[in-house]
Image (tube, rainbow, N blue to C red; front, side, top):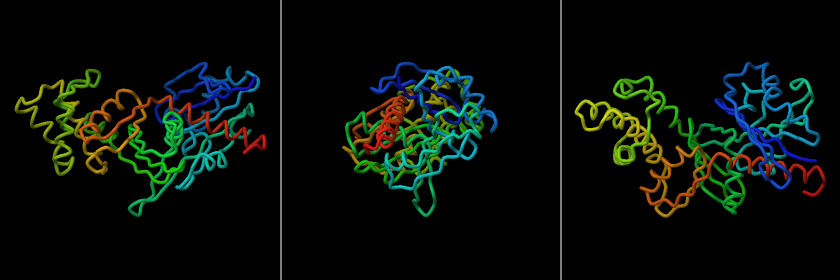
Length: 308
């Protein structure tokens, strides 16, 4: 028996799937044990508690992606400079050795990617695997892919190579404004945040037609003061403003195709916003990461067998 334990270990969440040799997901688990909640010396304990029974099955190997490979993670997996592709990620897999894993499991971490634009470095971890999964789902070797989240990543793949990407702190800025700014005082608790489509679309339109988020964001407060928007719609308006600001700074052309990969609630919002610009949107959920890890594992095994 041979199978892959695919792990997506991010800052705030931990997800895993068991994948058979045909690429089928046969079991899944998730836990609230994100990297930021684990002590540096505690990764092995968390891994064994969550997945030890899966790894005890003979023939099980593990590939991990995400912030688990960061400097603050379990074992640091280096960055691969763009342009880079699946062969580069396979060549730079970082093994979790016996000094970090008391049971000497067959565990490896996928490296992140780096690039430079506007004279400054940029990095990503985990999204490079999602891109590989999206390419398989599209049946293509070139695409523009956006992975929205705390830090949105815009990635360009050409002929199978990740050639460039850029990061927008959209989700983090939204959270700061939503929870800690004066705007938060006008909004109900976050548990009541539901997408108000009209308010979201209005926020996107204002951002695209405005000069910057520094100005447009304050309109959330003033529109509440003058009863132009109900309190329940303000968070949706703010969401539209920050996503619209991200798109305003990202030149996309009418008719351009963009793949959006992420949680359904976020991909829905990005698809709506991009549609306003006449963009052809294909949406994929977070399970694209299983496709990407499976592709990396497949190539790794081919190389080990001398067939690639």
